[in-house]
Image 1 (cartoon, chains in turn orange, purple):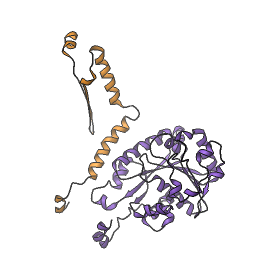
Image 2 (cartoon, rainbow over the protein chains, first blue to last red):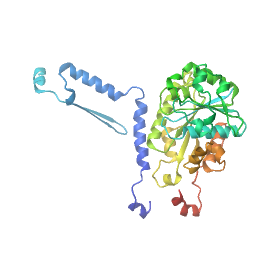
Image 3 (cartoon, rainbow over the protein chains, first blue to last red):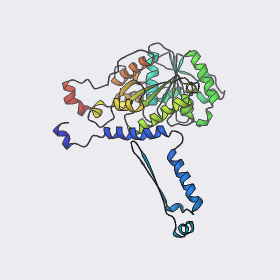
Image 4 (tube, chains in turn cyan, blue):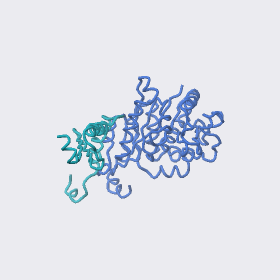
Length: 86
Length: 271
């Protein structure tokens, strides 16, 4: 790396390479069945058995990293349903 | 018995038809009998790239539906007498291709030709899966660009699952053809390098085709790039790739990388 590269835009190819490696590792692992969407459906079904779910109040977030995927399911449970369950 | 090659990529616009025509012409140039079959029903373009658009009478769908004989639908190239083209239909939709019809046509072509090159449509639907179905060898055309690499990875998965060879437990021979490569941009770090793509897709490389004006020029005049200007950089790269397909072992050179001092000074602006 020369002094001139300090003034240049960052190289984009390494980023492309890294993004592809992470993405394809996931796509290859879950070829055919999408594990995350299966989990999402099943987890929501279990919750729905016990409380009435308002689909507008369910937030599902996904973050795929090199070694782990994080599936975040955020379900807002109405107060009366929570009382009933208690 | 001839060999069946599928030229495929998943993504559109990466150079499948250009490569099918160029490789087919290169193989026919050394005397082999070659037929290139356009599987892009509804959006045929191989005829245009090869300069035979005004000579299409019957097409693949006519043959499959029994409306024409195979010999009636084959178009002989005007420049190479061992090169033939089987055009796709422009008016039917892709459902007109049936698995059994395609099998019959390919079997018949294999008996007569040394090479049957199947030019796949983009996507992963019927046309693309039927184009790869009977292949012995797959040429996966990829640009050094993220969406193309991702789609190639998907196609490689399909080749290992949906081809007759794969279903019989055999391995289909897969080769990477890297097209539109610009070694200057790769050197500057703004384009995926050959090694990056190879490492990600992990199939052997059959050739690197440089980004070049000659490719557009060839399609403008309706000739495979290997016939339009046999000494241009992309043509030479395609000739080498064709020789590797035929089993020769040749070292792979990265086009445009061996530039002298003048190239280094003036090359960037010119590129």
